[in-house]
Amino acid sequence: MALPFSNTVDRTLERLRTAFIQTARGAREAVGAPLRPDLPEDDVPRLKGRIDACLEGKGGETARRARAAELGEAYLSLSATGRRKFLLTLAHDYGLTREAAMARVEQWRNSKEAPRSLVKALEPPAVHLLREFVGVPEGVKFVVDLRAELMVLGKTDVPARTLAEDLRPLLGAWFDVGFLDLVRIDWRSSAALLEKLVAYEAVHAIRSWRDLKNRLDSDRRCFAFFHPRMPDEPLIFVEVALVNGMAGNVQRLLDAKAETSDPEHANTAIFYSISNCQRGLAGISFGNFLIKRVAEQLSRDLPNIKDFATLSPIPGLRSHIDGRLKNEGDGALTPGEIASLVPVTNNKATGAAAVRELLDKPVWWEVPAIDKALRPILTRITARYLTGTDESGRALDRVAHFHLGNGAIVERINWLADTSTNGLKQSYGLMVNYRYKLGEVEANHSAYANGRVVASREVRAMAKA
Image (tube, rainbow, N blue to C red; front, side, top):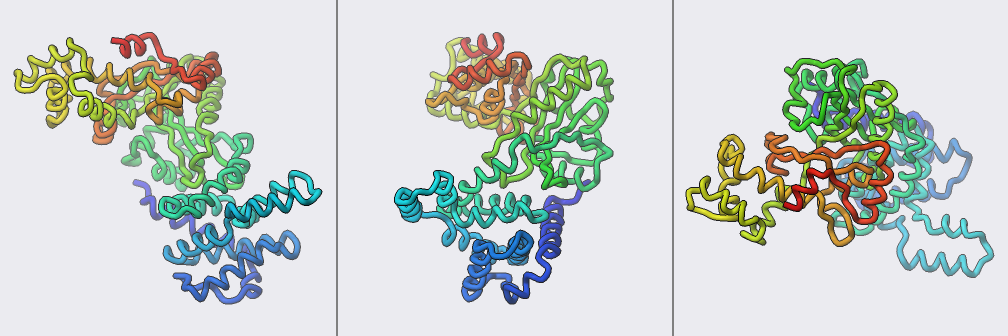
């Protein structure tokens, strides 16, 4: 099995430190002794002196790059406590307050400078500082990871949250989809990359080397986006199964013991896992471009593939079902559904209470009578959930929002498609196929942008039942 994720992270941090040390040769003598690991209060003025020196930008490009690298290496040498203090100093003392922003706007209004000078003046000093890292080896990865840490701090600290948000446009420009490379990952890829595939998989955990090899077999595909300045770090990857027809059960799809099929005979590409790899890039969307690029690539490589769809989780479904049963009671069910529950519960519980009782039974999905009674109820509620929207016209489920926004349609609801612990925990085992009809993607995207969820006739009928 691959190394633990923490080991992968440790090696990444060591690679960053090594790159910064090499770039910053000779800079340490100019800025003084190293900062102590926990960054005690009497070290903070020296830290701010180094930040100020970077912001002044004296000397040529090589000098600026060396100072930025030295500062980055100093950060990576700190303990967890020291890094927290470093980031809070950066966010609190080098952000842009409302008062400072208004003063700069007023100063610009009283000058004859061009509008672009105002844009530059309104950039927080911390963001200006981190721009310097784009020219430093491993600097882009450093800024991405720094934003991830700021996002954690931002849960309880407003300036840290503000700085994390201020960094989003900068990273959005750096990671424009036009700069990204689409790369196929297979069993011949480097061991380090395969380890990261295991570590970053966020939908269906990869449990063994055999499992990983199965997902990279000849009837499978895995593609990832990479940035030229982060060639060893996938940004996002998608796993694809090449099958006949619409897959409706993830356990069968991932069965490592199943016989490998001939991809030349497949007619459908099933996207069954999409994982974002860099937490610091949250809010910067390129998953939609990945799916479309992969579909185009597969169309060229395998002309026999005519249909493209996902087999997706429904992460908000269980809480939605539980909420409706609790808050609406029997109003969540039709009269026919209430009547159908009587033989299963022996009249001990009725209506919503009966559904609740059945769902609370251990391995309820393995009891045929319970399965038969609950299936029409839960699939109908699921159809309404997936085709419904909130007040702003956004899908109720976050995964649905992602795919519908990309131009997919709600194609089919799959009963007991994922009976793993996680599958039952988030959606009582139900999954959904979102279908990408390549010729209709733009029209579907526009429909969703206007608040209309596009679904198949089967799903629409189920929702209206």
